[in-house]
Image 1 (cartoon, rainbow, N blue to C red):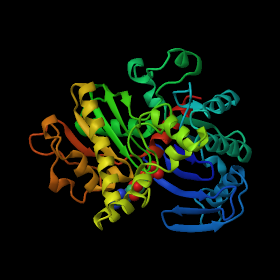
Image 2: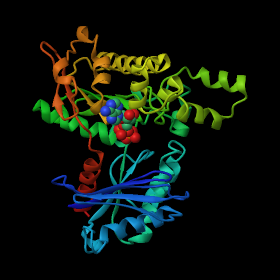
Image 3: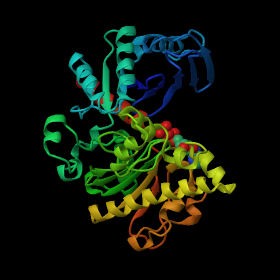
Image 4: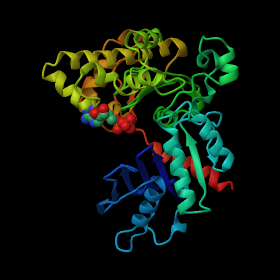
Length: 397
Ligand code: ADP
């Protein structure tokens, strides 16, 4: 089934038009600077590439432009908008919605409510859905939520040790994120292992600008490093990950910082960027570290050790682990990062093969001799996962 997948941010819209069965990607691209001067689309098909600058005051105009390039007489890949069977939208936080769901007014209201948990992400997703509803009325819109896969996490791993009433009254708990990716990686890893997904225990390590790690027990999320919001857990490009919550009120009092200031500090100014002072981008930090920049070296060590700590704790939580799978821009491409995380884990039964790991960027097993736990590079494919979930919903309409 031919599905358009949208990943809408507050000022951006990433898209893929693909076949949900074969995975063939007909077109993909990125619209940037929506609502800001200099808005543009970078659009790619198999044999055509274009970049168009146009004023795009809102997501509606962005969606209009997207349909325009898809329908373009000369270089378009569809003749009629009906060829797009449905639109699948990535939503970071579904609040109480956990399963892929056809959008109606009630769904939009729920996503509005869930904005409190993902103020950076959900408004863009809602704007993207409303944009499609305006430009292509009647086209089925399906949301696939990143928190969905983690809805199975048991209470003992998802409820915070704060007064229970905040869970009951305000729904404060660990929702996790990157669930679409963790689910995809889990399914692929089960395939590699030649087992049914419900028979595998896996640690899925998604390392991109945002980074998270999940303990998967019998194919279901059992614990994950991101929490109420995508701020908790690993050291990320600009996010701190785990810190003592007292840092918030101590720094707040010392520097007279508001909650919004602390939000910016921890979400946008921390992580690799905050420690290294160089960049939030792993390639830049690795380069600076190689050139002798000590703060970049420190940031990298912090990044590796945080992942190591989580792997160790998830080994303890799961008891038996079949495999560890690496994904995301860093997890797939930086063999240096994988090596630094995996070095020293031999006593936990995790051994990787250095020669298989070096330089590897593709889907590959990198398990070493004598390892009890298999190690894989499993490139993620969130768009395909969203397209497949969207197809499942639309088929049953
Ligand atoms: P996002 O979370 O935005 O989807 P990605 O999964 O695309 O992010 O990952 C982006 C990160 O991957 C950046 O930190 C980038 O530096 C890193 N990355 C990409 N290629 C490499 C590489 N060859 N070596 C090291 N890091 C890489």
